[in-house]
Length: 635
Image (cartoon, rainbow, N blue to C red):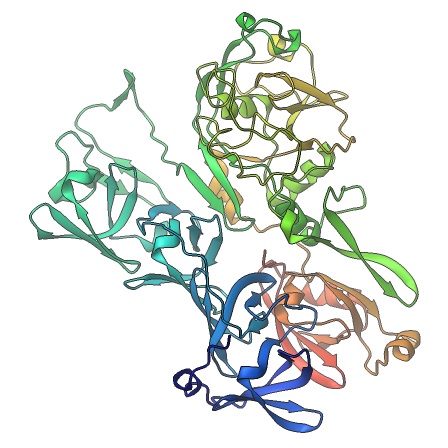
């Protein structure tokens, strides 16, 4: 059913002389190719080969701006390869407004919009409360996580009565319904001057606080405002509601670079021990570069190794002893197929020795009669499965790309079982539900059953997980009791609990062996979290498969310009985001003519990830000037 009433259609007017190449898909299957010039009343204006055509909007299923992206239906849209259910209500030649399941989006049509649907659908309703948690992050992006697990990242944030309004780096504005939001991460630099409130349900709120009635406080910020009951407040930095026994944070003196000094009248003690240095880390944090969620495992000693009282245990799990591990972050879930796919597509260190894994397929292109691998793809239904079918060496390559590490056995075991020597992540009783390997499960399938004391999910069930350590039968007997790790040997260690019915089990694996029952997760030392998150990913600068234009290329592909012929553009790459397409010829970079890849490398020598360069392409005889952000992939 079409949604364009006379009221809505009156909003669709010609607003610009800009034109976008587009395919207009009719409901009856017809396709009109041309340039979208604008709208007039209830019609789209399309400049086609036959001249200007007025297309009744009520007959349109979708408008496709990226010919390599094809919609599955008329009630969806795609932005930089990410697909949402939704439909347009307003459109001009500069922007469009679409209704989605989570609210609405105002799209900047010049920035990565693949296609927009026009058919109205009913969305499933969600029963969230709108009482989302606020956390602080160490980068300059806002991160909004929904109850469904969907993640939105933006550079600007605002709010009104019903929505959190997030604008991303491409100028797309997302109006996200507050009742669908679970967590909102805000940069430390954006909450200066705000007070913090912690409620009984451990929910944090940052904002300006004022009394509005007896026992009621209004907390407000650029994110919106909320009224809280003072009886629900267990801690706050606001002086009017300070608890008598709370540490007075007003005696905190800010130094620089995130360092502050807390002055107290008497020493702070925890469990009878005097605190000399206090490290403050978020319990859960998201790496905006990769979308991986990390949880904190605090430093301290724990019981490592099996208990003899469990009955039959392997000698290599003994003895049980106290082991100290420094604070670290570990990925909440195993690395997913989508996260590993992002690595394969983007990383500079992907070679033929890096295994592709299950459900991921190399993309082959045929250029001048020769087939070659140009990229990677996978079905979206498998995106959230843990990556398997790889080996230890491939997992290490993923870590090198992003600045992570595989967990040591000590880190893995502490993250899995806490400090009390339990047999299973959830306690001393076997989880009722876990990954039994009988089918593929999403990584968050067992978030309420197979979960450790620190909130790490799926460490008991399959798949098994690679650790950093090489295998030594006597490792527990000979290694240090402080941050132990064994970095030499012939075989490596995989960990899991389901094969032996205990979380201390150690599995011996060849580093080069690919197994469909092993995955991995990653760790970061807590003190290095800021450094790692601020470090650019080791990405390819362009994400293009190109070839030097010679006489053969000119003859076979109807090319007239000299330069680099674009044979393949990887999805989500810098070239993809810039609008470079297969068949384009790159004729100049930074206004300098290029004849081969070496010319390009010389021009960008000295530039860094994130720098914006100009690229001129010949597209069917028309020279287009595009802007490309080096090394920045839109995952």
